[in-house]
Amino acid sequence: MIRRATTADAAAIAAIYNHYVANTIVTFEEEAVPAADMAQRIGEVFAAGLPWLAATEGDRVLGYAYAGKWKARCSYRFSLETTVYLDPAATGRGLGTQLYTALIAAVRPQGMHALIGGVALPNAASVALHEKLGFQKVAHFREVGWKFNQWIDVGYWELLL
Image (cartoon, rainbow, N blue to C red; front, top):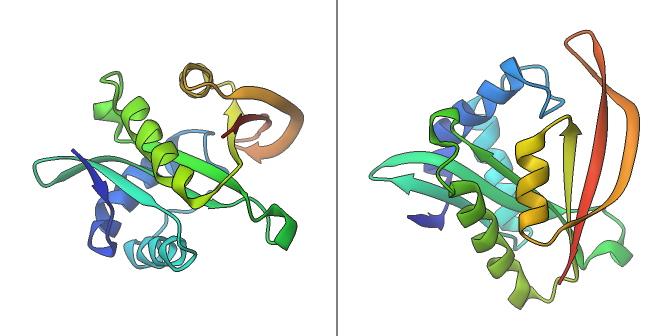
């Protein structure tokens, strides 16, 4: 089931995210995010009038997706940055596609024009997900991130609504 996340989901969402913080290059955060901080992040997305969704099975959160402002300046108000994370045990089941599809559907009625997904590279699964949903690669920045004693490239995929 995909539903609107709540701040009560913050601990489960933080646990999913912190796996990626500690073990992968897909996020450039290097310190675990406490549940209280995640609850604040969820609240900030809602305060901006934007969606944060959770994929659940029973009472277990298996993944989440949200949209945030791309940039702060007023002229960017119709562009959003998108984020999707799955519990590592829940990958390969189509949940990423379901979450992303629901996120796109949630922002369409808000009059948004562009969705932008940033991907730390290499990340074949994320690239495939974005392209499956119609995103096109629009940028590739070389060696702009540093994590785990290595330089990391970042690509950007865009979907015009």
